[in-house]
Every structure is written in C-alpha cells, then in structure tokens.
Length: 125
Image (cartoon, rainbow, N blue to C red; front, side, top):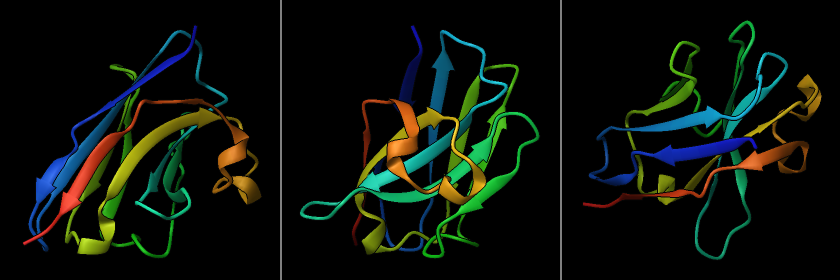
C-alpha cells in the first residue's frame, strides 16, 4: 500500500520561508515522479513543482520558479519543498502526489495515482 504523508505547513509573513516534506512508503519509486500541487479556496488545484525519483530532474510552475526548490532524499524516502520569498498568493493547501507522468504531462494532476492528505500554508502579514 503506497502512502504519502505530507507535513510542514504553517504560517509565514510575506518574504518568509517554509519547508514542506513528503514521506513516501509502500512501494518502489524508481520509476515515479513526486509532485506538489496546491489548492486555494475557490480555485482549482494547480501544479507547483515535481521531481523524478530516479535522476532528480525537477520541474516548476512559472509562478514559483526561482523561489521554491524541490529535492529528494532517497535514503529517507522523502521529498522536500523549500519555499522562500513567500507571497500572499502562495496561501493554499499543499498536496504531494506520486505517479508516472511523461515529461509533457508532469503538471497534470490526473497523472498522479497517490496523494498525501494536504498541509495548510498561510502567508499573511
């Protein structure tokens, strides 16, 4: 049984930083990508970032590129999303997800089979 547990959300001021983590278990993830999506109230879920488990290639939404960094720790089976220079528009529930998307579909939520429970990120002064 594949499980993803995401954690690390909280509150920060604009310009601040937060780190999210996603611990994966229950399977072999060598052919998987792990992604972060977010959903703000009244909005659709949107892609944030992703990383291929094997090789570590990363992908970012334009809105977070240069501010967020996605990395993986293969020893501890975890993926981290380091979020810097936070903005109020980053406020959302963040979800990690695992799947086998092709590169052109990396940002498509439907390509991910497994999801974490979500963690709230609030950016406000």
